[in-house]
Length: 94
Image (cartoon, rainbow, N blue to C red; front, side, top):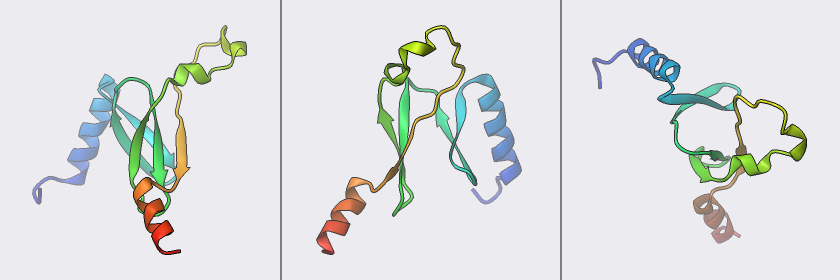
């Protein structure tokens, strides 16, 4: 949308994040992406094409028993590697 400024987009994302409707995820140090607040899931970033995919998982199952008495306010699980499309392209080039 040519008439929509980046400032408006970022201000809107900030308001949505503050309301809990979206959350900021930092998969790389230099980029922030925004995600709806669905049930627990991780993220996979393809190192070839750059695509970020949701990975359904039970994040609470990753918590060690020793953390039972701790309060965890935020959890992020990120995987990096090659997605199936890029991996199959790599196999075809062998």
